Length: 173
Ligand code: HEC
Image (cartoon, rainbow, N blue to C red; front, side, top):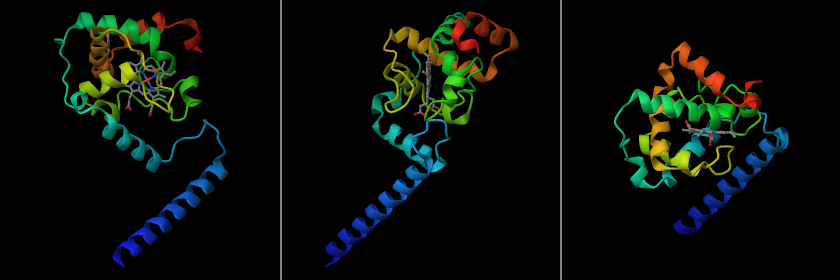
């Protein structure tokens, strides 16, 4: 009897959830230019953490902190990342605003509270069902980028100018 009740409750929740999702999608269409609902964002981030291999969740950057690595990764960032993530990591670009979900602010708590290994894994593998590409690449270069992402909240105005100057033309508009 208890099992039957549990099954019925699950079924009711499933139908109600489906109906709510359908209503939400009907009212928003499939536009990628809307902000994801905070519940959807929280759900997506929880699922992402759950499926990130444990090894990466606990990994620390094996490279020693170095201004040379940060400078190298800055150019890499300007070339491959700023078109979506913007010069200062804010994600305030035309491309990002047209993505669902948009690129988050890399200086924010959301990104800075990710472990080094999580950031490394995201850069290497990308994020499925989003605009974030998996770049593959060499481990060392990816760890340099992790170091650069940690540095984003402290970028100086000179560094911002250097990123802007190193960006491919298409990303500057
Ligand atoms: C084509 C657009 C695009 C490019 C190019 C791009 N990203 Fe992203 N990135 C995104 C989007 C969109 C997200 C958000 C995905 C999500 O919320 O599921 C994201 C998420 C991330 C995150 C996770 C941040 C968080 O708080 O969840 C990191 C770290 C990141 N990108 C780093 C990079 C780096 C480093 C590069 C360049 C090597 C790069 N990205 C290039 C679109 C892009």
